[in-house]
Image 1 (spheres, rainbow, N blue to C red):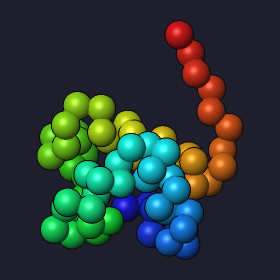
Image 2 (cartoon, rainbow, N blue to C red):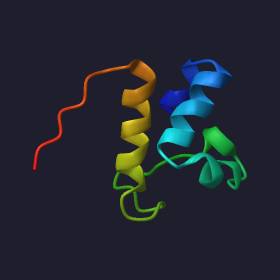
Image 3 (spheres, one colour):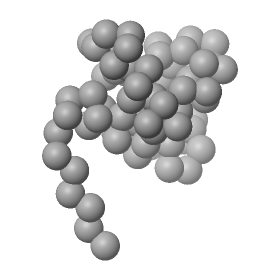
Image 4 (cartoon, rainbow, N blue to C red):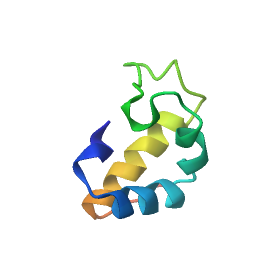
Length: 66
């Protein structure tokens, strides 16, 4: 997972902002858990939320289109 290259505090904050901290903490492999190419092993929308977490860690700008 792309979150591993950052310090623990930054990862925890990003997971909290994305509301994934609890989900990740329940996984047997925690942040070492994989996401399949199609995201089939996660519920609908969670792979996109992981992407949002990476954006928050990198502090990139976010463009929201309606």
